[in-house]
Image (cartoon, rainbow, N blue to C red; front, top):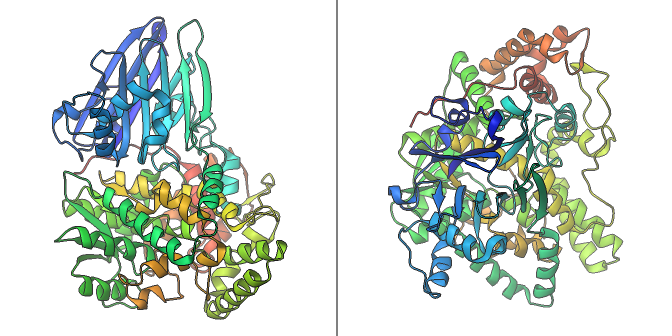
Length: 623
């Protein structure tokens, strides 16, 4: 896991600073605190620069430092992420007579590109943002993994050329820092930010879409750009549905266990110690149980207190004691200044708006992971999207079954829907707060701004969508992209690599292709996962109807975050006024009392606080 940065500049007008004293490096420094390497050269009329800040995980020697070049000098690569199946790919290449000089995955990736070019990408099982320079053809590729686990953004330079980086702020400083108002508006009204086309918070900065490569050709007087997807999730799921059709449930469940087990095993490949993220939920507990079968002395980290039933701590404590896992509980008692400072650090790390304070809790967990000396943490992100864990999926599945006139499936899902409604009565306030996202054409209404341009998003998807169709929307747009951004920026702000077995593409394709009644049954989502993990995860977790998520049960709004937010907005009203009209009673609405009682106002304030002061100084490397 690392940080990458680079550019194609017009040689006569090159002025970017890729040295350690420059912001381009400092914005990616925390992502890779172990080494920073650069190459810069003139090719024709263009200056090509590549920079790489390394977090050493596989092959800790300098032989795997980046930028990494092929033996003949034609290709130079930098990449952020991990190729988990690099050993299998290496064996395949060795059978063709190739010999390797390192034990790392970067050399394997370079050899794969030499042999297959872009056709090597479907062979890769991993998370990655890759940049490949081909000197012979005068081409440069920007490549992103299937689901966008690792970031890669780019922008056009005013003098011609492009700048790309793992950091949005680094690119915005040179390609334009004007806020994309529609991005922020959709974020508040419909509760999703990342995954909105190829946009970022800045109008001049775009992201390489997941499962896509962008090729720049700089052989002549102009730079030619080609964008092409190399992975299509919908097509892959349709093909998997055909493969799974007609197979008995027992065989489907056995396949699921095999896939999740292998995905977890692959993600344990590391030359540094590995730990796990734990909550009281099915997803992280399943991964922890599988990891425990593979290694001794396992340590976990959780946000919670083992004696506070306001948190997930007691559930984690019971499971960890049974499984023999040492758990580090993170449950800070910050004063007002510390709460405010953690809010600002989290916002700086994210380089984009956040929609809630739970992102601070995740930031606190990664701080502890770093302080305990770990560089790799496995987690359960992606389980809800893959196996249909969200409550909204019940309605989607039922609607689809009724439309297809599938009587048996409809009755099964109707029963599950009834159980969900009965069990969820206590959560009615949460449902009420989110009602406009799903029921109103305009989404949540702003309180602090007026005359904001209307937007329209149908979060339910098309009426003829199957459950897997709607899950794909969550994976590509409405849910997972923001969660992955939170996870990546929080972890990398402390130089921690987050690995997510449920986002193995084999697991995603399999889980989405399962029949709806194997995902939702007897009032439970993620039924298949619960079933095939039954021998490893306690029933108290598997059969728990209450989905907690990453709870923030400490009152941080009253404890300092509210006052800090009010200060951020009050001090920067003039900046906000560049993008929207403020309500005349802005100050009367923006009070601590209102923030404590109105969750939607907190969300709006967090987005506006980013808009008011979007580019923060780079974080200091603290490892």
